[in-house]
Length: 560
Image (cartoon, rainbow, N blue to C red; front, side, top):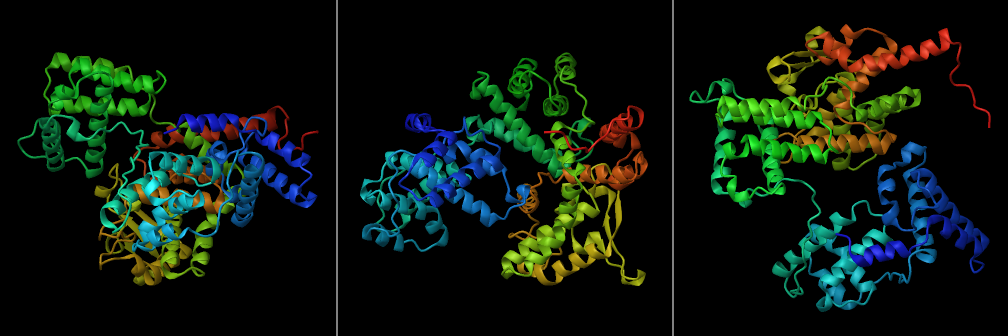
């Protein structure tokens, strides 16, 4: 939600280069202070890769690059990075942002009394920043309006370095409205809660009730494989597959609405996959992907085609039309994407390999210095990263691990620990049986003995327990692991990417050993392994060709 005022303000701001010129020309400040401000602005541009001559002097212009940067990438501490941001904020306020009022350290009595009525910690956390914003600017509680809310959002974007100003603004609006209903004496002004989501999924209430009912019937049948189902559902689908397809169906229905199909005409799943609508919906995603086929489009088309055949029972002629559309989207699937290749290239540098391999130990050491709850969370992530390094299993098998089912510490075999996952729990049916190194086993045992009881809410044997007696949410936990790696090492990885990293590191030490990599990753065939990872050895062969055949060198210092 960018207002005209925001755009005008951003356009009127000077660039970082202009701010540096103003700092150098300002004789009112001592030279030492000017030097610190200029150094902060230069370091901010240097570490984030921003162009000072083009970047506006506001955190809104720098936020994207700042969020992507972690101090560990540049080998600096988080404290030093905070000093840089603080200095840049002072420089922006003095030489960039126009008419910025100085912040006060106290609250007016009327706001202080109102804040004291908040009893829950979450209420204080979500409203405190807005309360101080209004107090600083002399806005009374009774004068809060939509204009105040918009000004607060502009303040978050332009004058603060918070990573997600829209999320803070949205939470504030929601909490303000809740306080108006539940806190005595709270102003009764209601603020509009903005929507920043770009997801296609629409509420099922937008469609006829028959569509939601048919979707629910399909979901139950796909999970249970009832005898009365068509031949296509001879076996039950996994919960993960059904959940994925359920979201695909809802996104496809929303795409049709965006393409001009009235929501009221989508009465059931059969109405969704008619040949004409199937083509219109697929075209929407094709154009959204800049008119090129992607594996995601192909997967969507295949799943909807199966839905049309097994559930909607379209006639053979209609299915043939769906086949023709689907065939145009076919693209190579067994290959490393550009994103995965970028992840792997980071580990061409031995220093980055050392950072990742040492991370579980660093997290475990840091846990010793934290209070119990934070220490338990750090150890939980240390164990997850260690297991992904030693036993590169799929994320869907990592998060539901159970101590009683998947771990065998085997004291009768000298204490060697094994990670054992039956084939019926693995994507391709290949069972996992990996002996864990002593360091890994000790880390898991220490976590289970000292830290897991702090996180577990019951006596379940889940390795990664959640708050409601089940395991942690897969998406949340995957993001937590990725964020932890990025924060502590500066490396950008994904949970699935640990499998690619394992293959890359193994092939670096053992060239051409695809059979062994296939066994490590649990592939059904070595052809799958070669299809994915031949590209890695292609780079090594090209390097050998340049050095051995052409006599070209690598690593020499370039002349200035």
